[in-house]
Image (cartoon, rainbow, N blue to C red; front, top):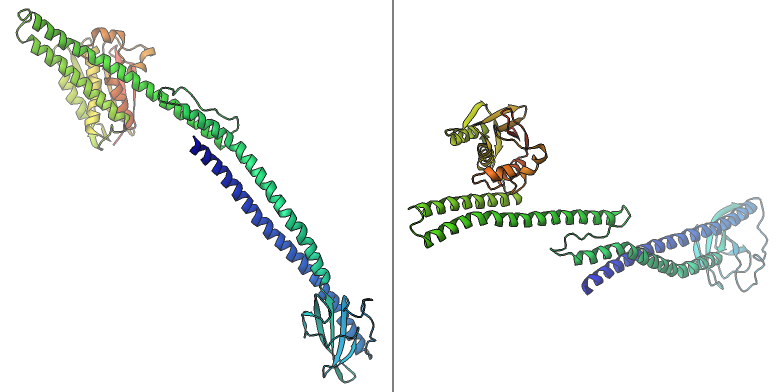
Length: 447
């Protein structure tokens, strides 16, 4: 119990952990991307400001005059302002600047540099200008302090909010997964209580139509099939015990009479009784073994072409006897693919069944219709009432009339026929016979 609960908890824990990790990675990637985009946008704005100042200064120089030095944005003299500029000659000497700077701005073209007296970077833009025959370099720098400050201001709430979001995701996932697993736990507890003697119990089915609901309904269907199989097995064992008791009782009765009254029983009668009842018992055991193999899916051991008409003619000759006419005029060609021994058992059981219940005539016919081979065996007996026509294919079922007249029937013959025919992909059915009794029709896929 503890192991199962631990396993359930571990599934819940693993699911929550995976959700937190995935969401954490997604949020971290999104936060980094957001900060990078904001920083890039602000830096572009600062660079545009520097480029604008350089363009204005270059236009002023080209128009005929150097710019006048002025304080940069009213900042104090100890620290560069937000935007600083500088004009140098061809020799690198500073000829004009927004305020005295410690040397030329250290960038050619566009780049970032740290200016003397500043604790942050500047983005610097430089451009060469020629005016009055002299070459100048105009450079301007825009402070990135606001960029850094804005980025830091954005990082702080993201860093504080990420754990809170992950905590919320973890709690939500834990709760949702727990509720999702609750029906599974109820199903597990119920399954734990189900034993071979309690197959009538069913697991609770949640009202939802999701995977868990379908699993519960599937399990109940499986339990129903197991219960039906268990019931059939118990009934089979009970019926088999009852059927085996009869020949054993006959043998024992004959032996007791022979032992108590040796001269009361004709000579050889005991041996005859033992042989007859043991043969009956052997047939019953063989038929039960055949049904067991059919239940295990072994009714068809080999597959080869089988001529059903040859099997029908052989069985018709076997049961022909004085007082019983066997009609074979309806036997035509019919070949199927299947197990020869199993199909021979089908024909034999049908013919034996008809011979036991016939008054004086039976008829066997084989014909091919389209892609199907049809075998029919009918008799002129009392027939089978419509309400019992499905029942006769159940195991150990013999109708009252059959029990009264049956000489050795086990009630398994037609059950074996149905199992073997089904294993070959065919069908068997009962209808009224033209002779007046019952007609059994087997349809098999043609070979």
